[in-house]
Length: 75
Image 1: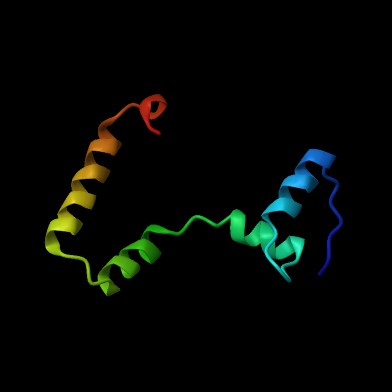
Image 2: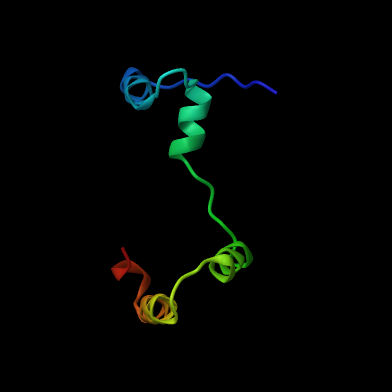
């Protein structure tokens, strides 16, 4: 299904500048605006990866620290 959207000139120029050879504007948007993965998807990806235990522990510690921060301080 096709949809028509209106964007201003600056937004169009930015999309056009981000376009790779042969790429449609829809493809540019999909590439640049990625969807958020669910926790289950991230967990599965990590389980399938070949990351060291040290790296996985560092990720876990970082997530734990981030969860303890007030929302306004997270970046």
